[in-house]
Each structure stands twice: as structure tokens, then as C-alpha cells.
Image 1 (spheres, rainbow, N blue to C red):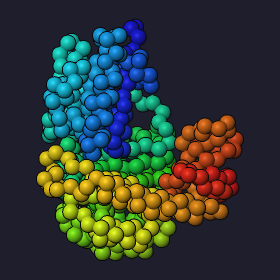
Image 2 (image 1 turned 45 degrees about the horizontal axis):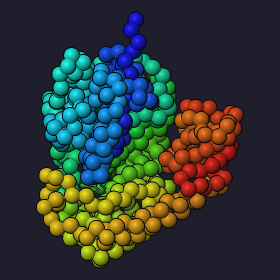
Image 3 (image 1 turned 120 degrees about the horizontal axis):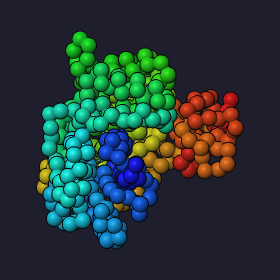
Image 4 (image 1 turned 90 degrees about the horizontal axis):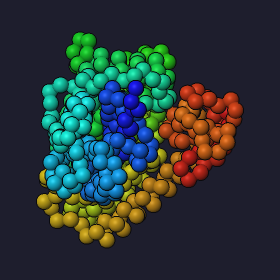
Length: 439
Ligand code: 5AD
Ligand code: SF4
């Protein structure tokens, strides 16, 4: 038999892309590819790209430029661009970078094997459709290989919210939920292959409304059903919009033991004026009261968020309002970004905040958020948490896992095994992780 062809995939952006890259690797596995970590060895390079901020999108072109010597050395090397830049720019990518053989948007990955065959035969292929069919159902089935203990499972894609800054409704399209039965089937399959923790993914995952027995199911009902799967120990979901936080989902944080006490709930800004300009459709106060309800259901809930500073029109006072909201909530973890104008979005038409002002705000916000993160980590010292061990650490005999609160935890103990969930007493807090001992 001929040697298998080698596939190198590089993934940018969100966890949905991580999931998609896994599925693309499986799909091309059926066409005779194995994945490689070494780009020099590749017969096919796929960049799974992100368009969310300008920097993310520009990285793709600089990366593509670097593949030129590889293609000179190996004329059979094929180069593909997938993901949100592919969706947003389509054929333009091939004009800007003639090295590219294939451009495939996020909704047509099931067509990748056919595109690969066409490209092997010498064609250049572009597909950025939004087809009717569910791409995940039409992907070649994965070999039933053993899986790492924590897995992603996309249940919803796209977004109908149209926040004024965001490209997602354009790159990922309208909101679509996968039917309940398909999600359950995939989850059971993951568990049979060794998975103990599933993170349900969607750009707007708490807007999930999949068809199931008796009608349309919301995310809480889906989680409660998934929780019945024996062997599945932990469930998480990301990323959510405050306005879709239905009552039963709030309740589930209190009464569904498999649902982990961690929630990523982006607010973007603490100023009502800016929230309105962003078309977020809620106020700072509504967000804060929602947090109160979540904490009433689950007092130890660790909160995470996303923030944008320097949105057009943001004044010093607006920014102070954001800092005030952050102080009031107390985040365990958060991401913050400088606003980046994205072509085709309504906010891109507005006058931007001067860059030095935006940078200064970003530094101040990040300082506050990292203080909060440190405090949240230090508060874990002396406590007992449960840890799912995911892989050996860098030091001899060390295992790394995640606590229920999603903190990375290191334990050095010969009894700690991959896939095991153990009680761990936290002994130390480092810059980005915790250390502990088995109880
Ligand atoms: N500029 C900066 N940050 C953005 N995000 C989304 N669009 C933009 C943009 N145009 C951030 C938001 C979102 C996260 C995934 O990325 O905070 O929640
Ligand atoms: Fe980036 Fe958004 Fe696409 Fe994810 S969905 S890769 S965050 S643009």
C-alpha cells in the first residue's frame, strides 16, 4: 500500500474551529491522509482561519507567504484555506496568494474530500456556500479511535444577533441548531471512546433550539438529557449571550451536578450607551441582575467574559463604567480586546477612538482582570476540587488536568492517571495554573 499522505492543519480563533479542524482531519482521513505536526512533511496544508479581528485575518496571509519554499521543494504540496477568512474573502484569497489551491468556508467541510480530489487532479477549488444540509452528518465517519478525556461537540452554529462590531453572522451565517438525537448520538460515541467531559459549542450556544422528541428543545433540556449518559462526568458550554440565558439553564447550574460551575458570559462593555451602540439589546444592570440569579443558583460559579475597549464613541466615562462593572462582577477569567473595525459590519462606518487611547484602556482593563484572575486562583489554595486529568505534564511524573472551575491543575503523583477524575487539594497558585495533591 502507498504511504499515507500527510495533512498539516493549523487552527486559529475559537474552539469551534478546533472542533472543525478535528472533523476535517477525520474526513480527509477517509481520503488516505494522516495528520502530521511537521509542516515540512505535509502533502496538504490547511489553515483553519479566524476573521474576528483584523490581526487574526492578516496573520493568514503572512503565514501563507511562508509556505512558498515548501511548495518549491514539493510541487505536489496542496495548500488550503478554511474557516472564516475563507468564507469572508473567498476567491480573493487565491488572487492575493497564488499558492493557494483550495478555499473552503465553514459550512461546506463535508465537501472537502471531493475538493481535495479535484485539487489533486490539478484544479483550484472554492466553496463558500451556505448549504441546506448538516455538514456534520455528511462528513465521512471517523475511525473509532480512542479520544482524549475532554472533547468539544458543536451543537449550534451561526448567529442572528448582529452585534454592531461582529463578523460572525456574515462568516458563519444564520443560527442553526443540530437535532437533539444527532447530538446525543455523537456524545454517546465520544463517551464510548473514552471522553469524560464534553464542552458543547456554539457561537450562540445558549440560543440552542434543536428538534427533539416532542418539539424544540432548549440548551438546558439538552444538557439534562446528556447528563443521563453513564460515563459522561462533566458538561460545559460556550459561548453565550446574556439575553438567551433561559430560566431552566440558570436552574441547571444549581441542580445538575454534571454541569460544571464555570460560565463564559460575555458582556463587552459596562456602559449602557455603548451597549446600545453595539446593539447588544441589554443594559449593564440587566447583566448584573442576571449574574445575581446565576450566583443564587450556584454560589461558587466562576465567571468569565469578553470585553471590547475603544468601540467607536467610547468616552472615558463609558470606559469607567466598564471597569465598575468588572469590579462588581469579579471575574475568574476573561478576554479583552481592542475594537477592530471589520468590513461589512455597521460599526465599521463610525469614527474610531484614537489608537493610543484604546491601548491605554486595554492595559488598564487587563490589569484589573488579571488581578481578579489571580485572586480567584489564590482563593483556591487550601480548597479541595475535582480534577479531570488530561495528559502528562512537562515535569517527570506530573499530570495536568482541569478543575471543575476550568483551572489548569498540576499534580505529581504516580497514582494520577489520564482520564481519571480525582479529588485534589490545591497547595499553590502559579501565574496560569494551580498545583495540588491527591486527597
Ligand atoms: N473587535 C474586537 N473584538 C471583537 N470581538 C468580536 N468582534 C470584535 C471586533 N470587531 C470579540 C468579542 C467577542 C469575542 C469572541 O471577540 O469580545 O465576544
Ligand atoms: Fe473567529 Fe468567529 Fe470564525 Fe470563530 S467564528 S473563527 S471567533 S470569526
